[in-house]
Image 1: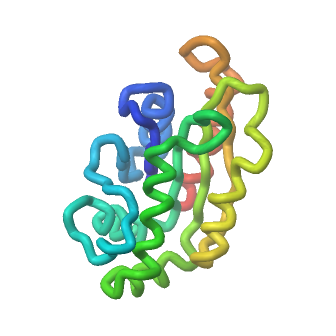
Image 2 (image 1 turned 90 degrees about the vertical axis):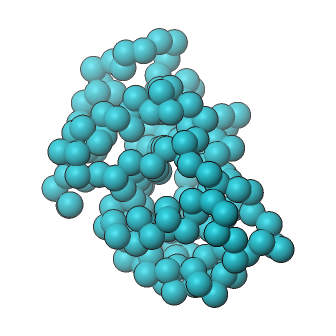
Length: 172
């Protein structure tokens, strides 16, 4: 399962998500957070069913490998991805979702970050790695793709995506 957290489905992160889906033999389920209804977390709406969050969690449970793709916006994950992370609180507080949260244990969580800086900002992985630990998921690390000033990707980035996708495809 690949969750694209970009604000633009057809942006650079979306293009990289498409490459990953294609390179994994189209086995991966793709969810673009910008294309689904995802409300902000609210303590008074824990049992909400007015958006797609529960469906996303159900898809995560069905998957062994879960890849989060996000652009680096102001040295952090995208706002869309942050909203998704905030909604993980529902898994803790919603009696309907609580069993689903326990079923995330043992899943493999990966991160693909896309940015312009030479390296992933310090601490960028921390929320993802800690969330994996909290849910007893296996944190599998991150892949950082530096775009530079233009698209298409350079050969080193394409090779890194190919290798990453190959590892994912071998596990599905």
